Length: 387
Image (tube, rainbow, N blue to C red; front, side, top):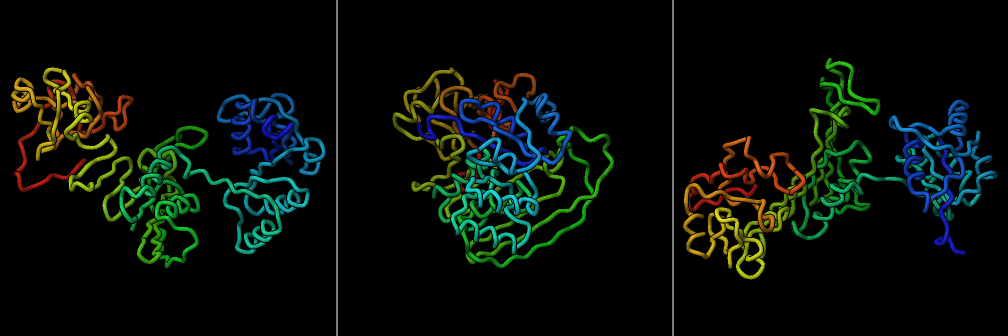
């Protein structure tokens, strides 16, 4: 029997928020993981774990073997791997003990609390210890998609990135990936500014009142020579109602800003790949072009200078040129809103929905039903910005 034929035996050290969250995930995948024990110095948590499991985020847990020390966990549980949920300083001696026992370790970020601790940890790894550090923010679906765009070449050579999605080492991890940085040196300029802001929800729930709280707004500029990274974060930004995450990446041929990509293709035409690009002539355009006036798919379609699809049939073309012709994103293939952007004149008859990323994929500036009409055509010498 190989390791692929059985579930992995997992041990955990710690019983705080992270340990409880990991337990929920492991218990939800019984065909892949078996929790063989949790080591914690907290006697009350050991009793609760053994009797009914540790609660996490208000949800009940499942019972698991509880141990008072790591040595007891190794002897009684015989884990294949141990997950550490301890602070950086407290984790170092435990990592050394597990390395001596030949047990692989997954530890929390940061990997160490000081340069000396990090150097010692590197020596352990160089000597053959199996130690992994859990860094997850670049794996979040949206952030992962943004980093994929940054590394795809779609924007050309990336020169600038601004990351305000996570704190400290988490934010810098995303920033380095956005710029394609590995171990290059940087010239760093940073500042920390005291601010007052509304309180944010916490893991326990919403704030009890709306009295302003103290916070620190940190900003740092990392100059890698030809590539500039800007890190920004506010101490209360997580879960905040008034401080939102943001990520932008700029390259020689385009820009990513949150979930919008702006670029100019090889044909010289600007496009917004978030929605699958501007309509083009040919079979693909046949599927993409839809005449909203008749709700029927046209036989072909070309992009005019204003960006409005030119439908070839007489009835459709005449309606499309009418001032009452509505644009649409709810029929046919999703495509960018033709410029100029249609005005939203009704809130009651919206078909596409106004939230930024509704379920049907339509976003701001999209058609909002029969009352939405195009604005006046721009000057042929002026190309509006793409949104």
